[in-house]
Amino acid sequence: MADLKFEKPIKAIHEKIEELKKLSLESGMNLEKEIESFEKQAEDYQNEIYSNLKIEDKLQIARHSDRPNFLEYMDLMCEDFVELHGDRMGCDDRAIIGGLAKLDGKPIMFVGTQKGKNTKENLEYNFGMPQPQGYRKAMRLFEHASKFGIPIVTLVDTPGAYPGVSAEATGQGIAIAMNLRDMAKLKVPVISIITGEGCSGGALGIAVANEVLMLEYSYYTVISPEGCASILWRDSSLAATAADALKISAQDLLKLNIIDGIVKEPMGGAHHNHQEMADNLKKSILDSLKKYSKMSATKLKEQRYNKYRVMGEFIEQ
Image (tube, rainbow, N blue to C red; front, side, top):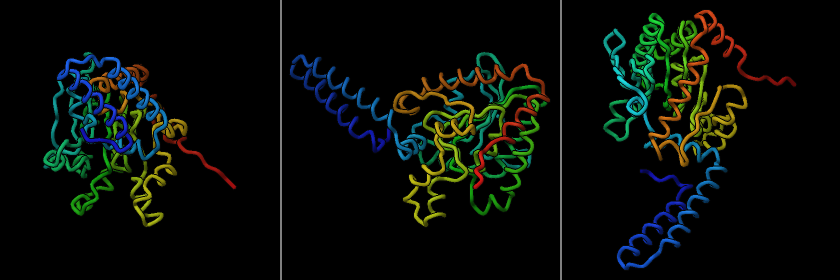
């Protein structure tokens, strides 16, 4: 597991604990009190650190390579996941994956961005950056679910839509725009969860929902902090300053009424305990779907429209 910079002191304490355990085994000395003392120290220090995280710390957690990805969530919280492929125009973009699954026996259409755990997987999934074909595939699955009355859940973890020439040549902008337009018309409940990175139109392209949730240490933004810093100050190293100004954390966005709720992560972040994170996410999804299950198609569309129509605050001077 990759180390986070701000967790190095905790790691040092855990290394000391392992040394004491090894010494206890080799020498026969009873070092239980010393080990317990260090374990309590590590726990207290971790609680203190995670109670006072800076935005740059949250960025590190959100981007951690060991956070659960879309397919891992499907394995950990769903039954009978069946992946559905292709945009019906000749391509199957692996950066967006979707399919039917059951959550506590309830059929749901799951669609999400997919990142890899290593270089080989990231090349397969294009580092979680969808191309137009991926957004068209997603919309095909959304419309299928809407036709048959199946609720939709999207999981978003992307640094943004793919910015390459191939994406622009095949209509990246219009593919995202059409998703925004057509998701607003869906006749079934749509729940979207930002599970890690939620950047730009790449995230919003599958996140026009009746309810938007964020994992505790995820972030959601119109532009990456590095991109913002590069534009404003010509210096991407000022990403933390940009992130603070953008108010991209789950806590800030909940205060601004951009999102509707925060899903609690295990202590230390989702990468520390995949199953606990999946259980928390599953409960949040079921609770959210329960709110909208009895709404008519008309009410669902009205609620979704009004949610985005009133979003934002303006200050006049």
